[in-house]
Amino acid sequence: MKIAIIPARGGSKRIPKKNIKVFKGKPIISYAIDVAKKSQLFDKIIVSTDDEKISQTAKKYGAEVPFLRPKSLSDDKTSSVEVIKHCLKYNNKKKQFFEDVCGIYP
Image 1 (cartoon, one colour):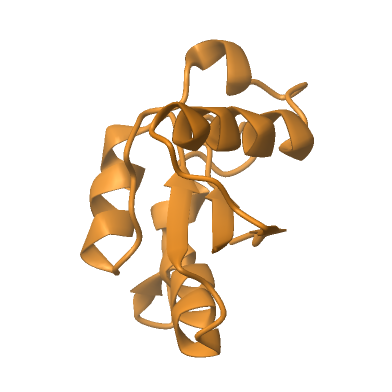
Image 2: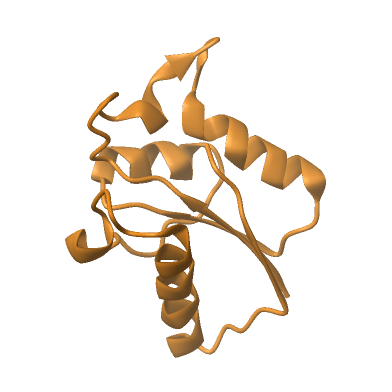
């Protein structure tokens, strides 16, 4: 199985809630979700976020948001690798394992 993980934290300091800001008629995060869906490469498209509004928007555009990321993994210093590992550990606990993992950024 193949998974796309889209990290989308709510606490951006320069542009708060930038992932759900509208750009050319759609929320910014929707572009990453659309690209992942159109590629037809992934069995799962998961958005990893700490923000309920981003979660709702991601679901509206067809991504899964099975959890809200803990605040400890949602600050300026958290790496993408840590976010992706957290998502994979969550899925492993659900007995879902992936051969290929791709990070896609909004």
